[in-house]
Image 1: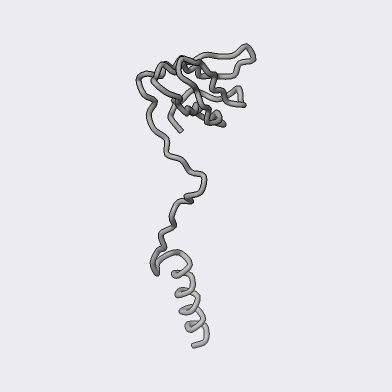
Image 2: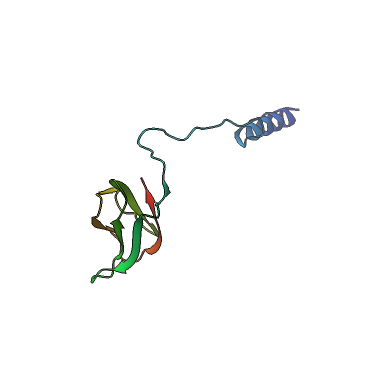
Length: 107
């Protein structure tokens, strides 16, 4: 009898820890998270590679005002969010040479 009671308690405890009893929603952190959007058509993006082999986006802002842009890369770190003034060009690079290009977004 003790074995079956102990087994019953273990099954109830285990089922609760596996999530059979319900689930709790967890919200994404809000501090420091910014929305990313598509780059407007007035921003020209060109994929380039630096001499050292680092993949880079060369972005030229032809928009009416300053744009904040970020280069996203596959398999590695993304570039920092960079402000690019009207009629100026910037390089958005990863700090890892093995990354692949993904896209440029606003930040």
